[in-house]
Image (cartoon, rainbow, N blue to C red; front, side, top):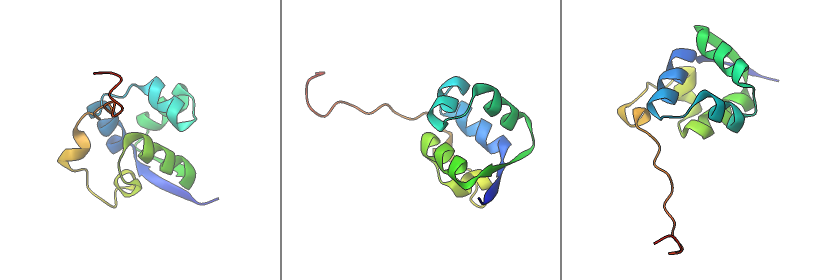
Length: 91
Protein backbone atom coordinates (compact mmCIF):
# COMPACT_ATOMS: atom_id res chain seq x y z
CA UNK A 1 0.00 0.00 0.00
CA UNK A 2 1.38 3.40 -0.99
CA UNK A 3 2.10 5.88 1.75
CA UNK A 4 2.06 9.65 1.51
CA UNK A 5 3.98 12.05 3.70
CA UNK A 6 1.82 14.84 5.09
CA UNK A 7 2.68 18.18 6.67
CA UNK A 8 1.24 17.75 10.14
CA UNK A 9 1.43 21.46 10.94
CA UNK A 10 -0.95 22.12 8.07
CA UNK A 11 -3.26 19.36 9.29
CA UNK A 12 -3.49 20.83 12.78
CA UNK A 13 -3.82 24.44 11.57
CA UNK A 14 -6.70 23.53 9.26
CA UNK A 15 -8.40 21.34 11.87
CA UNK A 16 -8.26 24.10 14.49
CA UNK A 17 -9.34 26.80 12.02
CA UNK A 18 -12.27 24.68 10.89
CA UNK A 19 -13.27 24.20 14.55
CA UNK A 20 -13.18 20.42 14.38
CA UNK A 21 -12.14 18.75 17.61
CA UNK A 22 -9.60 15.97 17.65
CA UNK A 23 -12.15 13.37 18.83
CA UNK A 24 -14.61 14.23 16.06
CA UNK A 25 -11.99 14.20 13.31
CA UNK A 26 -10.47 10.95 14.56
CA UNK A 27 -13.91 9.30 14.52
CA UNK A 28 -14.66 10.58 10.99
CA UNK A 29 -11.30 9.27 9.73
CA UNK A 30 -11.49 5.94 11.55
CA UNK A 31 -8.48 6.32 13.83
CA UNK A 32 -8.17 6.83 17.56
CA UNK A 33 -7.82 10.25 19.11
CA UNK A 34 -4.43 9.15 20.46
CA UNK A 35 -3.24 8.27 16.94
CA UNK A 36 -4.36 11.67 15.64
CA UNK A 37 -2.60 13.44 18.52
CA UNK A 38 0.59 11.53 17.76
CA UNK A 39 0.33 12.47 14.08
CA UNK A 40 -0.21 16.15 14.91
CA UNK A 41 2.71 16.26 17.35
CA UNK A 42 5.21 14.97 14.81
CA UNK A 43 6.70 17.28 12.16
CA UNK A 44 5.69 15.02 9.28
CA UNK A 45 3.85 11.72 9.14
CA UNK A 46 3.59 8.90 6.62
CA UNK A 47 0.02 7.74 6.19
CA UNK A 48 -1.68 5.41 3.77
CA UNK A 49 -3.21 7.02 0.70
CA UNK A 50 -6.60 5.95 2.05
CA UNK A 51 -6.02 7.66 5.43
CA UNK A 52 -4.92 10.88 3.72
CA UNK A 53 -8.02 10.72 1.53
CA UNK A 54 -10.29 10.29 4.57
CA UNK A 55 -8.56 13.18 6.38
CA UNK A 56 -8.89 15.50 3.40
CA UNK A 57 -12.56 14.55 2.92
CA UNK A 58 -13.36 15.20 6.59
CA UNK A 59 -11.57 18.57 6.46
CA UNK A 60 -13.03 19.36 3.02
CA UNK A 61 -9.64 20.14 1.47
CA UNK A 62 -7.46 18.64 -1.23
CA UNK A 63 -5.16 15.77 -0.30
CA UNK A 64 -2.40 17.78 -1.95
CA UNK A 65 -2.85 20.49 0.66
CA UNK A 66 -2.03 17.94 3.37
CA UNK A 67 1.01 16.68 1.49
CA UNK A 68 2.27 20.22 0.94
CA UNK A 69 1.96 20.08 -2.85
CA UNK A 70 -0.69 22.83 -2.63
CA UNK A 71 -0.32 25.76 -0.22
CA UNK A 72 -2.83 26.40 2.53
CA UNK A 73 -5.11 29.15 1.25
CA UNK A 74 -7.34 31.55 3.17
CA UNK A 75 -10.49 29.53 2.42
CA UNK A 76 -8.89 26.45 4.07
CA UNK A 77 -8.74 28.37 7.34
CA UNK A 78 -12.45 29.05 7.77
CA UNK A 79 -14.93 27.02 9.79
CA UNK A 80 -17.04 24.59 7.80
CA UNK A 81 -20.62 25.78 7.66
CA UNK A 82 -23.17 23.23 8.69
CA UNK A 83 -25.50 22.24 5.87
CA UNK A 84 -28.85 23.96 6.01
CA UNK A 85 -32.06 22.02 5.72
CA UNK A 86 -33.42 22.14 2.18
CA UNK A 87 -36.67 20.31 2.81
CA UNK A 88 -38.27 23.14 4.75
CA UNK A 89 -38.95 21.00 7.81
CA UNK A 90 -36.64 23.08 10.01
CA UNK A 91 -37.97 26.54 9.09
